[in-house]
Picture 1 (cartoon, rainbow, N blue to C red):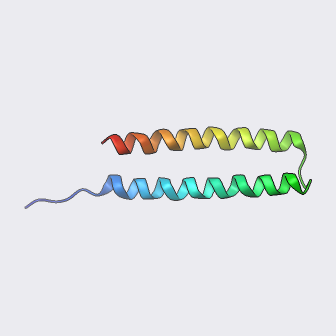
Picture 2 (cartoon, one colour):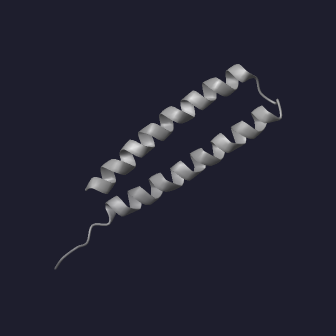
Length: 67
């Protein structure tokens, strides 16, 4: 009896959804900055945090794609 392991595909789907959510958050932050609802310093700081999270997500996705 062979049991198929689909753990990596489920985790990949989860990471893709997390990436989509992060992209939406970046777009919303950009809209708020354009409407001058937040300061430039706060925008830059938050944008830097989003960039770090996107890099980590891309590393995790690439690692799963190699396996």
